[in-house]
Image 1: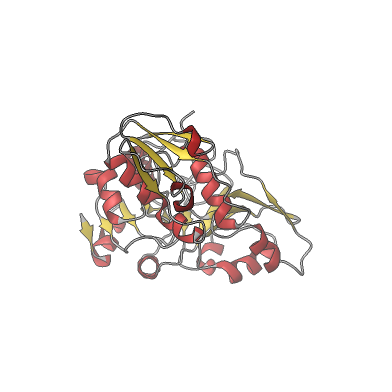
Image 2 (image 1 turned 90 degrees about the vertical axis):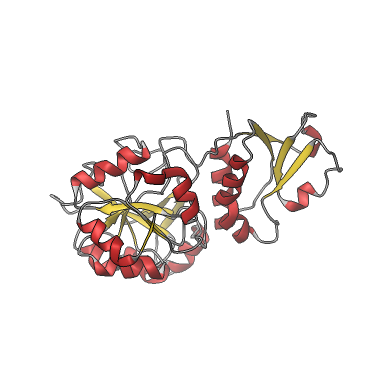
Length: 322
């Protein structure tokens, strides 16, 4: 059920759970200070109970009231990249009203989203929103209201429809707890080169950590997977000769495949527009699942070392069946 921002506000104050739009993916959101509402998020998503939630704020000034001392460079990053598709792992001031969302951790992942409708909602309420991606745990994230409704249906109290997510992949997560080093725990639209440029006058090391730590949402459990089993092949020459085989790949790779009535080609987009590939990736997986086939074959591709290229590679690797 799609709802207005006024109805969304009332639901959240009553301890309800709704889906919200962001520029990255849709989130399933509740009052971060309401323990019962937080537990309902875990139940709806079938999310492992030890997996912390990102908390969303309308400004860093609001977020700071929940934080303990943090490195000075954080302010530079916040000024450069927020509102935007980036999240920060920072020390939490204890005791805290949002520890149900952090699963008792002494740290919190904060985010200031770049979505006009969501920012309007965040300004109307007096609490931050705990909001993991709006999908059943293990599946790819929803990037449209329709995808949310197809997955979560009547399990939630409504969907605030903000249109299709423009970025299409989850936010970059930065571990900013160390004064001398930043660790990229999850790749996204903001990458290592962006961070290094922002901190070019600071002596801060930036590393691609791709964390398996308890502190990072999505790092300990399988994520981003379609219902369809996806197997990787090295080139079009390895496509199994089966009736109605589905082949996934970039448009440039699919053009190399001779016409065959037994093959259905599923394009992710062009190598010349990786931002569009990223923005459409989960919607493509949604379309793939709608075909209700048992398996598909992904042509391996090097997406390069750009921030978005690394993020696409990361998500596709998680989608593969082992």
